[in-house]
Length: 280
Image 1: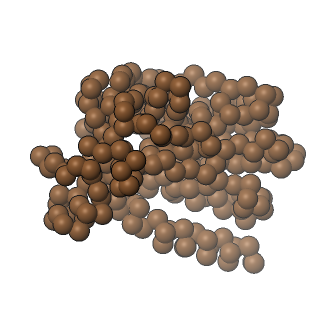
Image 2 (image 1 turned 135 degrees about the vertical axis):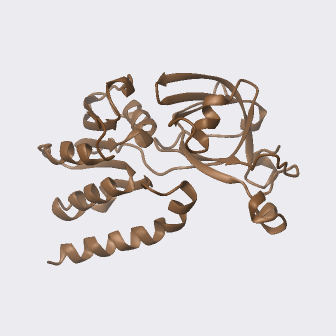
């Protein structure tokens, strides 16, 4: 396996340990020589793209994704899944990633459930672009389970006493986690209780009386509820775009590949809808 220093952009990491945070969230801590030179300190929403080769396929070393796609048939191409960096400990050289687990469904969740110390995983990254703006009057953090790692990381970056309203939708009480912050955060756990993802979350955010002053908002998760809250913030409340970090991490009915391939068009449509609504 290869790391990011060989010019291919692909690194490897070794599983050091893991633990179940809740019945459906697994924390995996990665380390090893493949993380030499890695850094993820600038943003709360740093992410990496985990690379999963098909079963029985071994790639030439160093791993070069462009070469793989040029020379191997499509059914031997890897699949990639994007995950938030929950924590990066530069001194220890440890990268922490939290995985939502839905049984045997999916790719990365089942991998996290069965992985053991000593296993290796390929990845690229990190990317990222959001951290709480210390100049904001208050912060709004909203998401489902997929955004919970980034929300947790953002809370840990809040300045002391910074006001924050936090809404996290999870399946039920057993999925709540301990979230630490120096900020003055009011955390609301929204329990889905079998409803469609995001319905209860949108209701909770819409019921919020917005505090005065400039908000810095982070809204991420399933694309349909993100679309509704994005329109509320951008069109109804006219929050400036530079005070918003909003993205659909996933969409019901799509796997990661199909969502990535359609996300640009989705963004274009949503942008057009918002522009049309704003001029009415």
